[in-house]
View 1: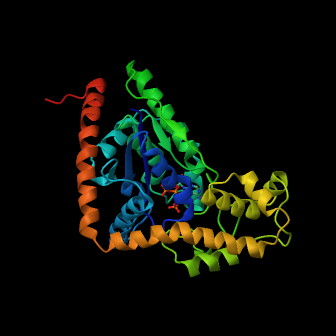
View 2: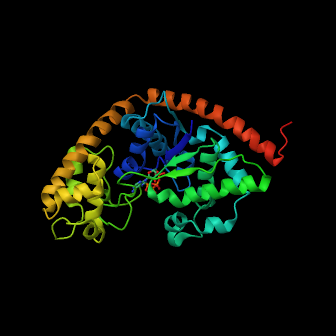
View 3: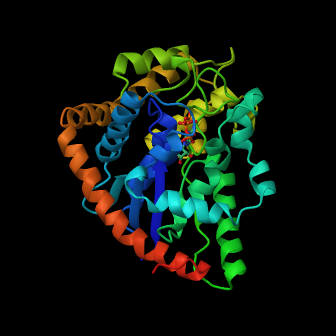
Length: 332
Ligand code: AQP
C-alpha cells in the first residue's frame, strides 16, 4: 500500500487553513493509504518557542487530528522529537544537499526577513529536515497545502540526489498531493497573505477552537471591497479577498468554486458572510468541542503519542540502518 506522511507544526493557533489545506484531506485519505501523521515539534523550534506552550500546543495539534476524524488506531500519530531517526537522517541528507538549493527556498526568505544574519541554522535547513521526515518512512505521497509545494520539490531532489550519488533506487520520489478548493487559504485581513498561525492580527484567521461568536465576528470584519459578490470566476480572481471567502465557502460546503460563484453572483456580502459564518461554525464547532474534551484528558493524548512513536520507530529504524549501510557508516 502507498504510504502518506504529513504533519503540522505545534506553533500556535491551528486555523482554518491548516484544516482545509491539510487535516481535512488526511481524514479522507486515511482509508486508502498507510498513514503517518506527525506533530512536527523539531520544525517548531526553528524559531523561538516557550517550552510550556510548546508542550501544550503539541497536545493541541494531536487533539485536533483526532477531533477532525483521524483514527489513531488506523493511522500512526506521534510527535517528531520522539523518533530520533528524523534528526539523524536530516544530518545525512544535509550532507548531500547543495547550499544553492536551500538558497532558493522562499519560506526562509519570508520568515528570516531582514534579520537574515540573526536567523538560526535550523530555520535555513528546515527543508532538509522535512525531506528526512518523509524519506525516513519511504513515504510515496505527501498531502500538503500549496505553501509547501517548493519544499516538497526539494524533498524529491534530495531523494534523487541520494539515489544517484550511491547508485541505488532506495528512496521513492514523494508525490505532492495538493487538492481541494482551499489549497491556499488567505488572511481575512489581507487577501495577498496566507492565513498563518504566526500572524499578529487575531482577526486574520479563524482558529479551529473559535466559538460561533468569534467566527461570526471575524467573518463580519473580513476585508471585502464595496461591490456585490463577483458574477464570474474571472471577476473573482481579480478580487483576492472575495475570492478567498468564496474558496472557503466552497471547501466547507463541498461545492466547487464555480457552483458557489453562481449561487451568490451579484448578492450582497452581508448575507453571504452570515451564511459563511454559520457554515464555518457548524463544521468547526463540533471539532473544537471535541478538541476541548480531549484536551481535558492529557493522559489519553500522551498514550496515543507514545504508541504512535513506537509504531513510527519500528518503520524508521530499519530504513535508517539501510541508509547507514549504503553510505558505509560502520555499525560494529
Ligand atoms: N493558509 C493555508 N492554506 C492552506 N493550507 C495551509 N497550511 C498552512 N497554512 C495554510 C498547511 O497546513 C499544514 C501544516 O502547516 P504547518 O503548521 O507545518 O506550517 P505552516 O505551513 O508554516 O503554517 P502556518 O500555520 O502558517 O504556521 P506559521 O505561522 O508558524 O508559519 C501544511 O500542509 C500547510 O501546507
